[in-house]
Image (cartoon, rainbow, N blue to C red):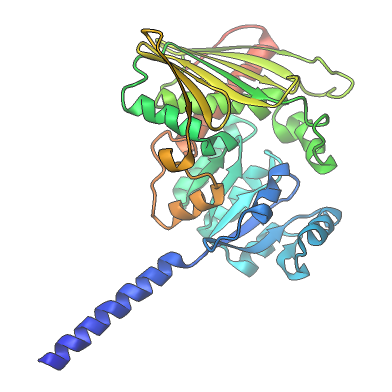
Length: 365
């Protein structure tokens, strides 16, 4: 009897050990495209054991060579054919770092193979493509996440937490400021600039590139409530640089009892990602990723520096992706990364583009 008990104990320990090792096994991640400036994140992240880069698809040989030299990468990891790469390296997930237009191609190749996908913001160039991508992800039961820098911000997480806890009751107005001096002005790569300023490959200019941030956060704060209408205007302050797309846009998103004012620009005098949220009981003003101010209806003002540890926000998108796929965290409904949220973001952006073109308010169905 004693021997049997010892055997059972050993078996349980071995099973637990194998289960722990399985959870600790790094996520096999591939990259689809390198032209996006954010593609450098995966190579510059701190040494972590949660993700293993197994393959890179990039059709531009010269761009491949730049990354080989910059990060001392082996030739074996590079492919010029997306389907060939996915078959050869069999990743669990793929991160799309090509043009926004390229996102659909990545989902078409990855989803039927049961490979999870994370794209850079926004989800798609238009609602037609977004819905096709969503349909494929749902059919093949894979995650389709959209990554925004502001999703990593402790101030963004703190704001959403306050909404959940009732400290932002009856939001009446949200104001978002996102952008910088312009992609050329801040020195993005030639490969990035080529498609970022192409209305087909990017879906637009500053309206899309930075308008998506405010639409994403507003959709989370409003818990997926559909707008009643969208009105937008755009400007082209620098036509000699940005001849094909707008470099500035203001989008007014009207909800039943609230509104979001989204100011997106490649014409700010400085880089900014900040917001204001006005509610019945409190007002929040964020200055950046960690600094924020809370003003009560009694005019008491509290200035805070919030941390990732305090809010529990995951500041690395690849860690977030790995935890989702491993089942360690669940993407909240209409959360910042969620498919439901980002489908609505694309709808808002498309309505804004239609409003700019027609000069009229676009009503939502």
